[in-house]
Image (cartoon, rainbow, N blue to C red):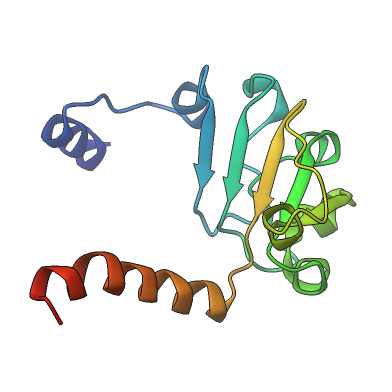
Length: 145
């Protein structure tokens, strides 16, 4: 808790004493844990909230409770990987609405209610594209390469 207080002080924020307090009235929630049991409960999340569930990337782990996963519009990087590796989806037997690429290219219409979850398993291509974007946007322009 001392580390959280120090960090909050440095960035001008507040440290929360619980996950429930941290997500209270949040529009966007990001979970990045190695938790094997859910740390985010449906009862704590307001309707219209978006969750990026980035951690718990094994089939036997889940950060988001099953009730929330089953009631959310679920997006993934790839269905094939999510169905093998995403414990949040597998354990909850949650339905995957779309791959994020289907929304970006217009194959599927984006849905927002009652909640949205982007369950990321992580793809090397996403990392490579993000690195290229950072390089082109910041590094190359700054050094005029």
